[in-house]
Image 1 (tube, rainbow over the protein chains, first blue to last red):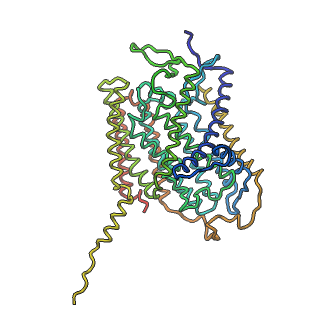
Image 2 (spheres, each protein chain N blue to C red):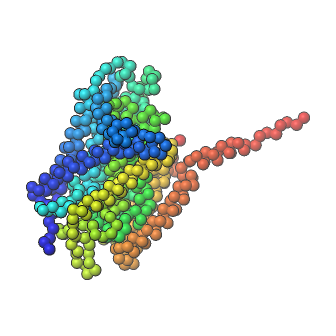
Length: 428
Length: 118
């Protein structure tokens, strides 16, 4: 069998251009239809119809919204800092559109001129690129809030900056557990290690998964963490003064972050495009596309096919959609936090927990290596046991309402006030 | 490996053009009928009182400083994390000390009330 070669030369540039165009278009469409999905699912949860006038079942609603936003009157407040006011929405939009570039979307596609990786750019910095660009969005938010010269917008921008930086710490620390298991920062290798381990990282790193999901919700400013735009407190927060397409740019930015965060969670913890089973494994190992190692250490060559690429693409879309629906579902399930609760959760719970969990997982991995457990399903099961105990302890601890003052503590205070002994009526 | 960055540059170009194009197109197509009232900052229909550039809580500043400390910690942990299984016990103990020092710092800030928002 001839060995499979990665695509090279002029065809690599053509493939790159096609991938950029294709994935960019699909990403924009996904963002547009996530807004429709959000409205439809919200309607379904609240037992009403939702948008159903534009096109069959309201399917053309995002297009109508887009046209409307282009044609609406835009305002530029007289007191706003003009340059930064216009610049800020673009600064939110740009990072949310480029972060998707390092996420692999399907198994490599064989073509007559070579094998094409289904990823825009397989850069060696991988996940660090995502971390770097996704955190840039905070500049657009805080700059927009400041440049509006509006008190609501300013407070929204401030809240957003403090909240996003707080949860970025927990996000980064919970991510490190994945890097320890995968031993690399590129996303194709993270997927490959999950295939080799025989289980998705969501199980051996269940607490890391939970912390990552919570942080991702806070990073994207979604309920229950939508403090920056809490409409009952701040009108709509940092984009109060924005209208027409500049407002839309903020919305696209927010939904773009949701889509990227969903794809990232699917890749890091649910095996990315991997479908349970081994037939779709494919990874570039020393210039060869392999599907695994035989018992004697020799490589087993991968056998990529078009149908495998399509099947894994469907799997990836399904996993990403799961997280997108989870975002919307949680929006209508949990009430909004108070701001002090958000910050307390970030600094007093998430940060110490992720630090302790990180060191515990490191210790477990080193002990397993010391004992000589082979990298595989048994290794994963041992880690799963440790993580499950941690997760149960964490959920139990957080549920007590000691570190974060919750509604339960307030009820207790009210009872105290009620039971203050009343002076006995004076006798006659 | 440097070839991997070319599509990235292309994507950057497309994204920047898209971001500028959307805002510019909306500016071209949209009508402008400004009135002094419309151009006022929106404060629920009231005429704005005082300056927006007022002082704000020092807490936000505290959070920013704490963030720098712990985000740098994350950055220091990443190179160790990807090599952890090859490096073994020695670097693990070193990292334990590093994490304990930072944890003590967090505890100090916590007890000093640097994390309170009430």
